[in-house]
Structure formats: C-alpha cells, structure tokens
Length: 352
Image (cartoon, rainbow, N blue to C red; front, side, top):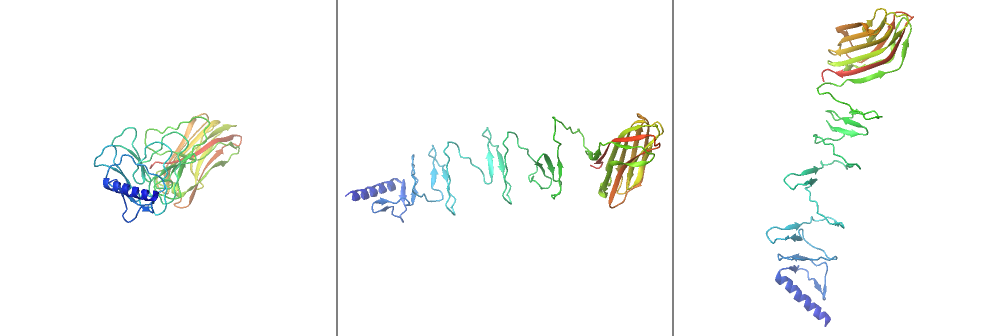
C-alpha cells in the first residue's frame, strides 16, 4: 500500500511540475524506478520563474548553460553560468568567505580603481615560451614601469635589475651587457646628473700607491700602464691621464712623459726649481683610426711656470692589434726624489 501511494504521489508531482513549466524530466530517461527517484536523472529547466532553488549534493546538472539567473528585475536580461565541456573531472571550490567574483578578460586582469567609469588598468601576460615566475617582494612601494613592451632580461634595449645592479642589454640581444653597480655605501650618497647632453667619463684605471724614483733617469710609473684594444682609438674617442706627487732634494728639473706604443708622444720637462708639488695631465683625442692629438700640461714647484705641449695629428698608432699606454717620470739630478702619489686614466667619447 505504501509503495503504491509513493508511486502515485510521484506521478502527480511530476505532472504538476511539467504543467506549470518549472521543470521536466528527459523523456528518454525515467527518473522513477520501482518507486525510487534516481539522483543522476537529467533534468532540464523551463522558462518559468523560480524565486528560490536549493540544490543538494549527489546529482549531476547537465548542459553547457544549465543555470540562468534573472536577477531582481523580471525582464529580457539574464546572467548565464556557462560550463566549458570538460575533458576530465574538474573541481571548482568556492571559498568559505563573502565577496564579489573577479571577472577578467582572457589572459589579463582588469582593475577598475576607486571610481566606476570607462577607465581601467589591465595587467596582461605576454605569451610565455616556458614556465615563468614573477615574485612580488614582501614590501610596500610602486612598481618600476618600462615603455618597452618586451622589456626582460637579455631582450634588446632592455633595462633590468640584478643583485645591487642595473643591467643594460643595449641594441643587440647577446651575452654582453653593461651593469651599473654601486659600492656598498657607508652613508647616504647622491649622484646628480647635469642638465645637458654628453658622455660620462669612465675611470678605466687608477692608483693611489706611493711610487718613488731617485736616479737621473726616466722610469715607468708602477701600475700606470694600460693595454688598449685598437678599437678604442676611433674618431672621437678620448683619454685623459692625470698624475701628481711631490719633488724633494736638489730642486732641479723633472720630466713627465706619456707613451703610446712604447714611444713618447708627449714629454714635458720643467726648468730647475721643481721642488714641491707637481701635477700632470695629458689628453689624447683620436682624430682617426691611426692619428691622435695630444695635449699635455705639467705644473711643478708649487704651481709656477707650467709646461705644456700640443701635437696636432702627429701621433700614429697601429691600425690593428693592441696599443700599450703608460706614464713615465724622470729626474735631471740624482740628488732629487720624485714621488707619484696618484694617477688615473679616464675614457669617454666626444662622438656620443
């Protein structure tokens, strides 16, 4: 009797649901078998309005667009929850929290900002060619932006960060980069770039060791020797060699000379009374691959009677191979002592 009553109740309810257009069972599948409802029976929604619907676990909802939400206003606009046809079992977990679902276009995240208007900020990922990881640091601050859409390590024209360095790739993407690395500071420091265009001189070599000479000869200043590739001497390339120290003793003349390819290209000799501080400066300006102009100045004896020399396109260098550059000092009297306390070699390009 009980089984008979349940079966007829199921038939009556099914007929009622179909008649009011709430839902219907797939005619191919009979959801009722021997008075028991099959939980996995396919059920399709009709167009009638349902204000409240509760779904319990244990069943399967069929269709690519199984849920259509009308919203508070009954009109021609609805929100459809679409399901892409799965190729394996998938699980989407809703968190135990309240909030709004973030909607994004494909391959991007879109941020509206505090004002709801027609302007948004979109974060887009370039199509990767391998697995990539972008790590946000545990700190507050602004992201450094680039106008180069392809900015990345080893990309042409890129500027990226490394450990304690800025790395510049240059126009050619290869294994060679220029890195700017600061020495570990012991206090706050500020480097100010001037308000004009030009090249920045680079100190390619320098020394602060004491070098002394006390014979009536000319000798190399220890360490003030540099071997240059031939490409460094192209038109517009410039070198500046600076040195300084003291002279004590008989107060006779001193000589400071600049050598290129083992030949003295600019040799400066003071008169007597050279005792005291001395400073020398030589500037080499390449006017071509094999010609340079040399400008030299030597000041000794406390700044009196400077000696200078200017050679216009008279110094030849080899068109291939390496070019040695060195600094020499000499004494006219063995009773004098000349000390070189510092020296530096700078390089820049007048063509930049």
